[in-house]
Image (cartoon, rainbow, N blue to C red):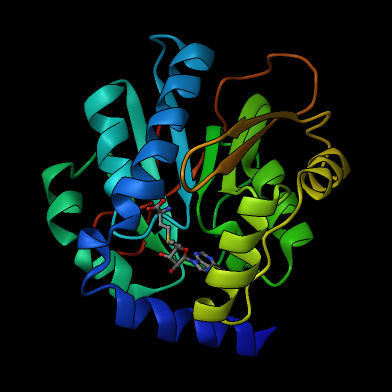
Length: 238
Ligand SMILES: C[S@@+](CC[C@H](N)C(=O)[O-])C[C@H]1O[C@@H](n2cnc3c(N)ncnc32)[C@H](O)[C@@H]1O
């Protein structure tokens, strides 16, 4: 497990230099981000909301959320300091409304029930304990909050070739979960049954959605430990 995370840290520290110029921005990341924006807009409307983006990288998606959905307060978390550092200008541009945090998807440094939306795009295949990561996503969602999880779709012959053969060869120890496995993970975390949409692009991807609890609206937010702009923690509203 530790080895897989060390590998991810090495890979993304190296990749951070050219990440924003990668062809994958056009091929996969951009389309997946636009799919997320559409779903969030449908789910949240024009209400203010708090979003956590897990595996946020250099903050491309976080900045897009701020541009497209100005009522969002966004936290981005990533394991790799080098990726967050490369997003410096984005964090600065949206300071106060977008907050980067360095941390691990399998152990989120947030209190329970504090986010309306949790997103995770193109990062999940790097998590050695995918069950634990989904449990953590569920934990930080408020009742009725929504998980939107995107990763490469590997259930078709083309998807299998891209993700299980090509990507796995380049990236090493990664695991693209099947649609059925996403269903299981999301249901086991109490967010199911998952709604799933396959996007059949050149680089096909799967969007799996879950909703936290059925339940009562409850207080909109509890107290939340909010990462302050320069590290450390500050109490937030409510
Ligand atoms: C391919 S990038 C995707 C970045 C962004 N979500 C996007 O769609 O452009 C994958 C990101 O996941 C991060 N990552 C890998 N393992 C992680 C973990 N255990 N916890 C949090 N982030 C992780 C990497 O550092 C990297 O920034």
